[in-house]
Image (cartoon, rainbow over all chains, first blue to last red; front, top):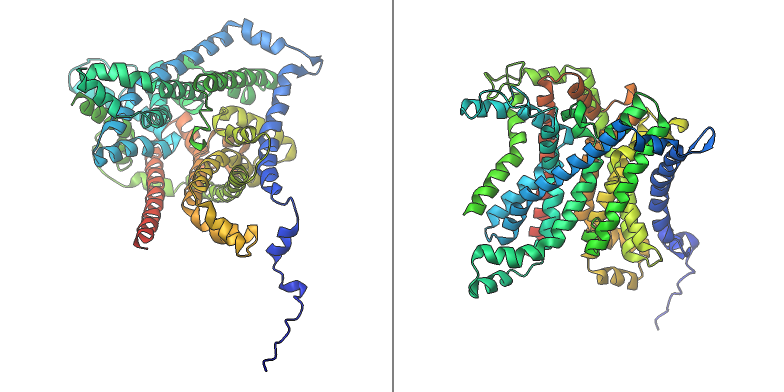
Length: 300
Length: 259
């Protein structure tokens, strides 16, 4: 005869803490609420609170700050300079990134792939200040580039490469390039490489196969990459502040000087709202054009 | 052929800024001469003898460590929300989680300054950590969501079927599986905080001046070659962090292949 020993009742403390927690229904919604609340309070509400200053002052609702921005020559010039620099940066980063991304998808050599990815991604993660500082050494009047060019006898006088649009555009292109390369690469990767072979086997020269087959198929990447770089370009602060001159004041620098120097919070808020709306509109265009959110692309 | 030459030239231009800074930091000259006329370690000496730089570096590392922890926890929660829960407005939620990455930092910085000032959170480590975490959440969210999507969900169902609680299943099954993604997300968060200038510029004061702020002031007023030494230290730090992460994940992959 086997005597079966009866299990005693499970005591309350033997139920683990996590089992007890799991009984509370709806607890998983904390996963949603905590990060959402964090971003809402620190980002959304504080931004809204700050933007309120552009529309309301001590006398109530007013549009005077916006009309001031859009009717003063200096401010209009800053807006124009911002757009110009962002456009130039977008253009040059597209020209530089396209061959890189093309090589990245076309090459069969693993070594090339690694070298290209490393040379794009390593600078990307190195401190922004370090990169800006490095460009200031390269571009200054007695800097490395001017010295090399003078040694080679190409120029007699040092070129003015810094504290003007040229310097800002060169450094910002270098800094924003990874975004362009990755946008292009993600689209080019999806292009069926056999299409190029098919075009060539039917008699197209390599160049023609490229312009008529590959280039049109890569346009979505060009669009999303350009919009991303442009959006980041218009809001850029550190590089233009360090490498730009008095003629390259961008909107972000104007916001900063209104906060720290002139203490005109209302005007700073109006400028920030203009910049924010421009960012939103451009992202909206990106969604319309490519049917995808350029920022969420990697997650879909 | 032409393509290879073009790409080769572009690569040289891309890495030349880094390659120029490193020899410059060992220069014996007080000016930025290239190639340096002689070599010395005096700029490293000037870095380690200056309280402002060294304390700034320590403060930055301290803030970056806590930012990385906070942003990783919040980022993992947001990623779990997106991959495990179904609710109305998920797209909006995802957009909000990546918004700090795309909204110009200057706006975030001024807005946070505006709302932190009345709360006494300026010139304060807690304020800086809270603000840096906002900027670091998107990158953790993106990396962790990608690894959660690439994970075999059945393993989690199996753990639940065997009587595990959802919380237990997460810590014993899911988290070990997505660890590489979590580690690289935490690393990115760390680096974002270590390098943050714009938001810090508004929020930091004399007692919380971080290394990037000291660098920023040095660059704005007058640059001396100590900057090159600081830059080389930061480049070395960043690259070694990435290499060690790469080694850890390579070892993981090798172990995985063995079985």
